Image (cartoon, rainbow, N blue to C red; front, top):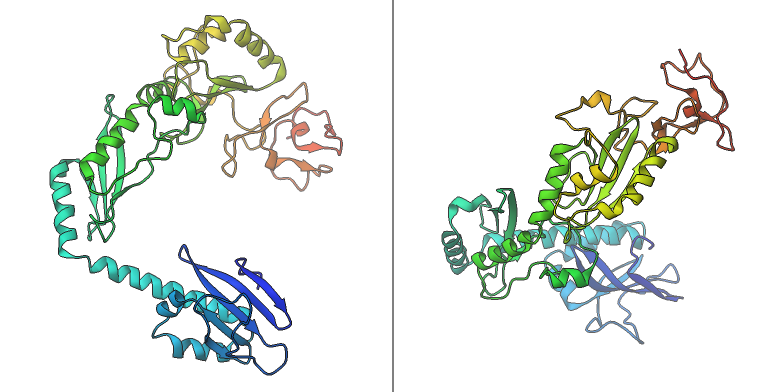
Length: 403
């Protein structure tokens, strides 16, 4: 019965479980009783603390009996004979409960699909009026039953945002809903409230239409115009090595500095021109001077400039960040010293060889503990000190190259 965590054991003799089974985000109340002997105790009602309105069992056999709420009985109407046969054939109660859940999922799914197809005429009328009022030129996707539409919104910088609206089958009695916008998470709730950001997401009141929902979405997106300007500047003027495909919700960029070094920058969404959180990666001998410059020059930060420009001043990067405009990707030296690529199984290099002759980044997943057998390893590798370490995390050999 461990497969059903919402069922709690009430008694061990006889073995009785009371609680819920979860089906399609709904929790249905049930009581399961298994016989204490070879003779089933089917049909015996619980005498103490029993279920509400469940005085009779729904199914019973040699493995026990199941009682359920009126809601459960209503859903299973018409399925009783089939399920009773499955219960007779089941080897134990847990096996039958799995069959019961499968049947409930199919039945509830079919009902939901049927309800969607049988939307009343007023539903179609109201939704079409909403789409006409908004303008079909802004709509990029419409489901056949009009239950879901996708609307394109352009911000002041002509960046396109797609907003998804869903119309329930009982619309307009039940208001439409808007899918969460692709915006960055703001950790400071108080600051978010001061900027007018609805922390709980967009809300749609009964009677409000699609136009009102889109105006609300536009107001939320407008709060992040400067944030997206800042992130776009990093994307266009630096070599962004992580994330591989940034989204509008990503606050972090890891930018290459060259010579196996990089800087991770996390921008504050509601104050994007303030000094971001930064973290330097690379050989200690190289990044320590950078770290010193970063803190000593902190007073030079100018909020009228873009964060990238400020960081170039603080780090004293005379030629600026390496970028696709000024630097070849092969020259930024951020790849793994073992596999030569930046990503391995979706991960970026997260370790640095401590050997003075190496100090290259590498993927933790490629570290192998143990002696090196040259005859068994088919690849040419950089610095075996990266790969083979003893139990104390010390390099086992000092050779710089393996051929």
